[in-house]
Image 1: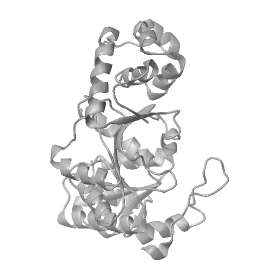
Image 2: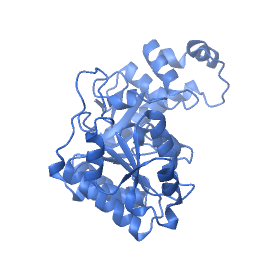
Image 3: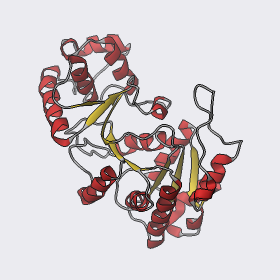
Length: 318
């Protein structure tokens, strides 16, 4: 965990690399492990960087002379906003995110990072839900909170909002993954909700450096982190072109369970969720359904060390 303005040169290097969107996560990780600090990075030309990562890089976005000032600004924002960061090789980096394709090399976060010993569920869906969708997300979030299942979502309007609220009302914790720097909250209308998430022991995190804007292309990118942090994703309500379906695609790629809310399948506004169900997504209506699915020996997760299974919850608690 790193927090504040007294950063080492290597920590400054990590921040500088997080501004380099022209690099893949694996390339940033390689450079972070290869270079010894910010000065060694800013001394590199774009040709030098291409040689290090072994590909031809063509970009107009690399301005090494501006990076030291950007890093100092980010450090000041981290101090002012109580933002921490964790590097891929750090012991507190979420282990599930190390498993996914295009893993982030660095995370910025506020609050408490999710407990790797507690399998989480991602609740996702449309920003414009029906009243039934709002109620379904809220109720499922409450039940997950009661059962001790952390809820992961994106703090967006709609289903995300009700999923986070439900988890808190159920006495649980929840993780919000943002598509911008943590010095700002997007949408601003959920600022109070974000405060409650932190007060209740949850976490708000992002792979984007402080000061970064919530640009449209960043929302699909952050969806891979929502699924990556979770053992299962549940699409509560989603029209045919919902961004929640992007999260479902990432979940399949990452080997996560893809579920749909069973009680929402007959609603015309849920065409995307209905298609997922037809394609074989697991129907889930309550937290008990999810726990039973996880308790099925054919679906149990094994830890990477293959010694023990991830702990399963007592279904009697639901």
